[in-house]
Image (cartoon, rainbow, N blue to C red; front, side, top):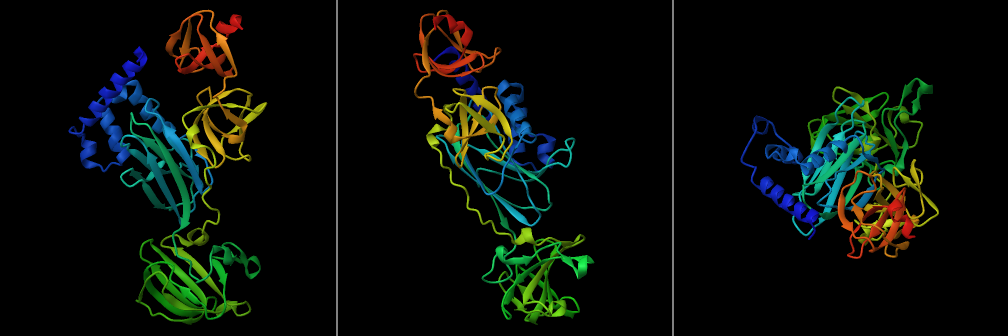
Length: 453
């Protein structure tokens, strides 16, 4: 074990000891304010003064950076990746979300030792000066988080492991409807007239969705609730109103052929409220259910997100899992790395052949990679190859530092004696990623080895 690794091992052991023994001290904030698992863990770090160590500071900074530097994804989404004990890291995903959807996050972890992972969900701020608003959190005691979206705002998912733990993760993020579909045998694909469609020659807008079905088809309770009104109106015809017991909103069923419930009646999901028809101002149309949602204090809201079922399956991960945490290099003449795992995403960089990339994750047929400049992006798996076969071999003419990164200020992992041969695995700028005779991988300053070529 070299000196650097020995020092790291001692530091890790010390940090683990301090974390395990700092639980007795409580701050006033901890006594009077309910904290999330992440906040409690961060508080323990600070109580033990671990935020003043390089590793503790890096952990806290990674969590904060994740809130402003997230990757935009589309749902459903699935990614697998690797957390390294010596590299504090937080995952961050930005998703578009609509009121009425339920965001469901599940996390699988494979690790030799028990590893605590923190999942936090935030509403993205409206301006750069605002802080994200935490709306839900969990840790790996449940490895599952479900949240009903309350506002039409982007949301940020942050996942971060505790310090000093390595392991593989697989995260799946999906959106699902919060209400059951109100017509049997139909789905959101059968919605014909949507929110905002013009009515009465443009004089008003449609405040709901229309679901066409045969006359006499049951109209079903989409949520547990209490029937508050059963009446006949000129526009809605025979209508039923149900108070949603869990969400502070009222569900509106219109154009019914008949009503089969009474005011004050308690209903459960799937109970029949009436039969579909075309009463009221729908007399000239085919039988259908007009379904609306009215939020207390806000009025009508778009029902579609409450009912929309995701038709796309969760994309399978098609790339080799054994590449996670390992190096690959660009195999094409040039290759684009992108901000999102999609060819439609913006190009972040264009890299030449043999550029080394560290694989930190995988989704569908894309790798999430750490570039030599320490930024993270995505590259199509078909554009890279493993570094099992060296590009070339070099005999070093002078003693050369094996660096941790491709940067002039990078720390030296160890020194390679003059005359030793190294395998060159890839090149970036003036640096080469090499493997020494002992199998250790790191960077060298290429000009120092140039005369040996």
